[in-house]
Amino acid sequence: MALIFLTYIFYAGGVVAIIYLILALLSLMNHARLQKGLPDKYEPSVDMTATSGPSAAEAFWGRTKILLQNEQFDAAFADCKRTLEINPNHAEAKSCWTILKIYFSDLKKL
Image (cartoon, rainbow, N blue to C red):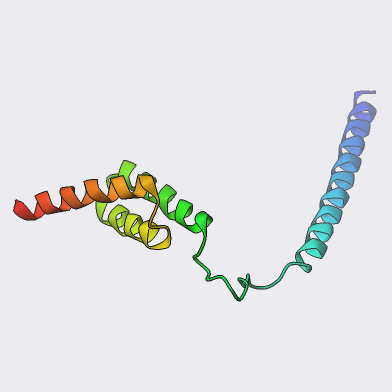
């Protein structure tokens, strides 16, 4: 009796596993079909450069803040400079630039 019960349990488990596998394969095929519609490479519009606009400046600024938290000041200095090249009116980057310039000038004095 117990052997028959275990057989049913294993059979039901196998059926569930096969159904799950079929659903996963169908989902994978659907994902592959959606990927075919995407362009191979992002091409910016003709009137905009690849790094123009507020989103690029904010991305560099976000990376600057993370680098400052990790005490990687050289990289933060470069990213802060890049932020100001993209958006010269970025207030947070301006204040950070001033602080980093003071920090690096103090290091040169040592």
